Image 1 (cartoon, rainbow, N blue to C red):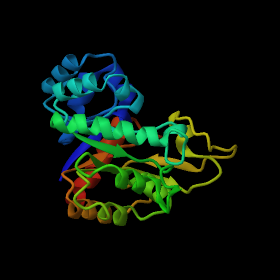
Image 2: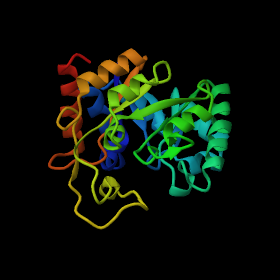
Image 3: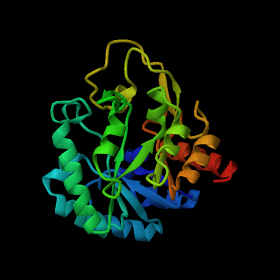
Image 4: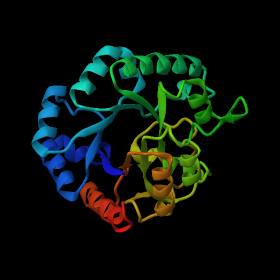
Length: 270
């Protein structure tokens, strides 16, 4: 498996100095990057920065509302960037499993996934913990994957949110063997409590309640996750890439955390 890095984790660095950030990640040993926005650059300008740094874009997180605004432009831009995958990264409360617009979400995913397939791109769905609600007797996340054909939609399992939801990340990855080309590696400390950690990353969470946040995102290998088991499961499931993501870095810069993460993964043989 190759090791990628979700640039969202170092978004302030990328906004200030995109080329320098990409070069730093390449120097650390990352094989590729996953995008989350273009920071004001055109797709062509961003591709020039990638080429200059010598690091490819393997995939991109694109909000569903942006996808639906112009599906063809989305495909054109990210194909120009060289992305083999596009992932739906997050949905608003009404569009999530159990929400009033969930059926429309599935239709949009199906339509866009068909267009992606025709263009030689694979559509993925990236989970949080809020998909782990029951819909028709199964988790909402499983319902999404059951409702959309495997060749149209594959998984991008975020192992942090799987564990935060109360499931075993390694076992969950294995349950999608053959449908898991990219697995997100994200570490943390803390348990599900009174308030969601979404507040830490500026995401709206309608389920959040007042209370202390005893939660912290950590570099890979420095939290509660068993990454030896998770990476073994990812490999067995057929993943070609594992992607490091750390939504917020506390006590160190994002790039310092990125270095700690890849050094840890190298130390366990990835």
